[in-house]
Image (cartoon, rainbow, N blue to C red; front, side, top):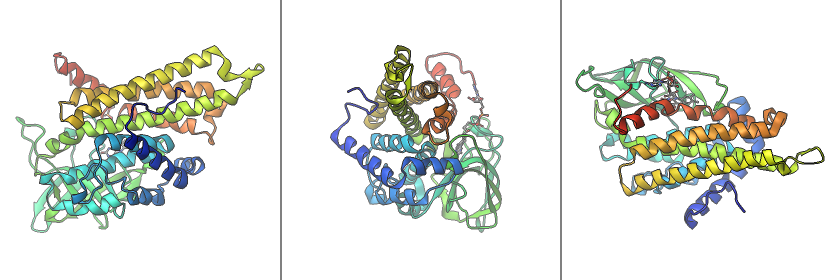
Length: 388
Ligand SMILES: Cc1cc2nc3c(=O)[nH]c(=O)nc-3n(C[C@H](O)[C@H](O)[C@H](O)COP(=O)(O)OP(=O)(O)OC[C@H]3O[C@@H](n4cnc5c(N)ncnc54)[C@H](O)[C@@H]3O)c2cc1C
């Protein structure tokens, strides 16, 4: 029977998905996931269990404290988490990003943090965005100055997930002056410990992705030791660029988790809800809407799998990963909209996951990279004038 489950996956990948589903059914049944969403709370026990199962360390080699695995494995796990609680999947993606950064040969002494982050014993945040720097990240204002005591950081970061829980915040800051000839140079990533007076975290309350625990971070004379630099000084954008393709396919995984969760819920509702003496699912208009959604979901999976394949083979992947991220987010926005329409008032009810999917799908359109910026880049890749 046609279903929202991906087909043509390897037996190992299917087993991995089954393991994640079973872990989440045990730790985060729907009522509990909706409670986390409603209260915007972080479920530490679930996070620990993801760590104990080796899922937080996917993408980092075992000899460096990770659990091995491929990009496709990370995408599958991300998707399964997003089906249950999309905002937890956002945290999962961000966690996977700095675990990957720490595996790089040039990561430096900060690699010592990897085993604790990959096991869940330690929690990290990734602080790039600022009040004045979102899509236009290079305009960030946070500075890090080196002195005898190590690094001294000043500035503020906005929309930083999991920051209230974090032991360490991987912070993008300007360490060297702007060079007009090389605008992307001069920024560095520094691992800043949070247990100090120079770091203050204030929770931000959002209408979507509530359990990602998104916060504002103030760095007011914050300190980090000399050996807290992740990667080469001044070359953070190059370091981040190496993981950009992975971030995009993981973001697409979050979208498809939301889409498949929403479509499953919609189909279940269509089977049971009666109107005019028959089920909603027997009505052609509602069947057509569901058929459009499964088609878009399957097409988005196909594009995503092309993008993941390109990364795993080491082929140039930038355009494909952009398309996969863009397409998955746009398809998901349409799929959750159809889901909401099919469920009427029940879609808006707090006890239905549909309203959570509907709200959470909004983030996917502009984060971690906005769909408009992806379109700009694709335009340029097609030989058109740079538009930004
Ligand atoms: C729940 C949540 C969790 C997050 N977690 C983190 C985190 O952990 N760490 C972190 O660093 N950040 C995080 N973010 C921030 C996220 O990455 C940013 O929201 C994203 O980069 C977009 O930036 P912005 O919101 O400032 O939008 P802006 O950059 O202000 O953009 C606003 C709109 O303008 C459009 N736009 C901007 N420039 C152009 C252009 N040149 N051409 C066409 N259109 C353009 C954009 O596409 C967008 O639609 C999070 C955000 C949320 C909501």
